[in-house]
Length: 125
Image 1 (cartoon, rainbow, N blue to C red):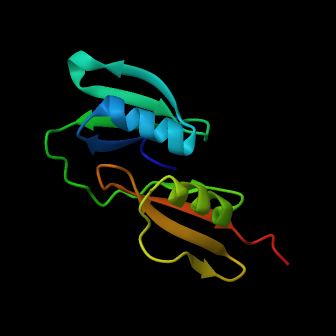
Image 2: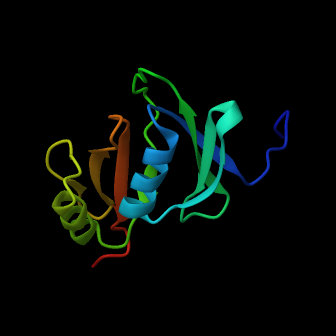
């Protein structure tokens, strides 16, 4: 048994230059909904497409991308990648495929935070 009992929620915090601009980018590119902007606190939160998972943006004049890489499940990675690339989203190399397991592609938000798309291949014949 664990020492603490966590709730079924998680907020992934990222540093960004402009919370409002980042919120629009995440809404346009990934379909996330802005929950609120707390301007006095320099904080914004967005609801992802996964229940209980939110993104939190802390504003910083010179954000340094960290080693946190949020991974979002997707049904058709290839189609999603084409759409994002058409929108000038930068990807890190080719799509990686581990046969019978997963297909992944790393891409970047406007503040150079790494994000990843992952397509589950365990059900493929």
